[in-house]
Image 1 (cartoon, rainbow, N blue to C red):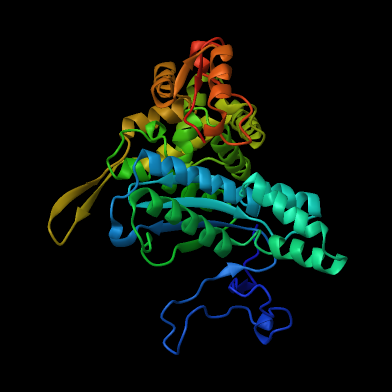
Image 2: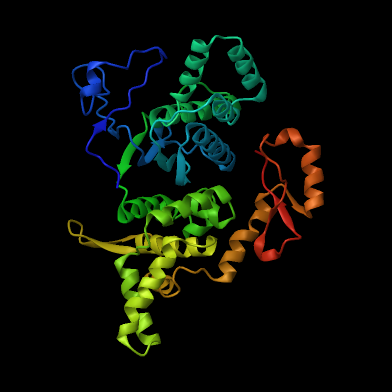
Length: 403
């Protein structure tokens, strides 16, 4: 469990030599982030000297609908690059047309050797810039070298710094593309620290992945490609890695409604009520260490449908029924009974969409030759051109959009 006993505000400064060490406020549990006596900006409360989970969100200025497919693709790329540099783990995400949600694991402060620092810089800097920085580094004495490495490392495992550079780098890209100036974001981002418990983690993750369903954009969250769940269903290995971490953190637990349905189902399939508890315990044990994506997907799907069920709310003041957009209750029960398994037809539909979203389709040899010809259009870490479309076999592959 994440210990929230010691709370503190991460202090950042444009001056890298800002004397944080030994200052009086380090002895305080929290400090105020505002300016002036009225505390206009409020508190930014984050756990101190330990890793923590956090849900962050930010909206565009004036809540304008600025994000199309190209903008979302670029944002996801920048998000993953800066998360790799910072050492943050992305559990899931969701990009809407005018805002985004991220669920992150922020590690405790770290110490890295020089080679590790270079690797982190290579994830976000062009090769020429990294080489120039390292060449300058090699000319310095030991003390200055340590100071250079420390200056880079201090930007890692830092949520405010990660959000600052992510939003600023995307703003620069967007403004150049659109020929505009000024800020792209409406005020600063919001952050909510999440307890390391199955209910808290899975509820927040499901809330994020259900955003397009609640907005009425899709009928099922598995079809929304700009969420962690939708990307994972489409074969994105990084998105799958985040959901796998979530399922492990759930410690095998399931929503009580899903458990009740499963108890009734097992009771019908067995001859004795004594067999129910061992069967449930065996299934929970399997969820503790899921083997393969299908097991991860099934476990996460149950949490999604549980939180995504459509409900009707009685608005007493206006004496009318208001329906919250979501999944049909019958569909929810079916997911419980199938233990989150998705029909082959639905899985095939989601995977085949890569044939239209990519830039090329064909044999591995064809795609490798095409990427070689247009190598400058792909990132330096892109080693393999094609990705398998699993329901269609291993011979036909799809090449996703350029990095």
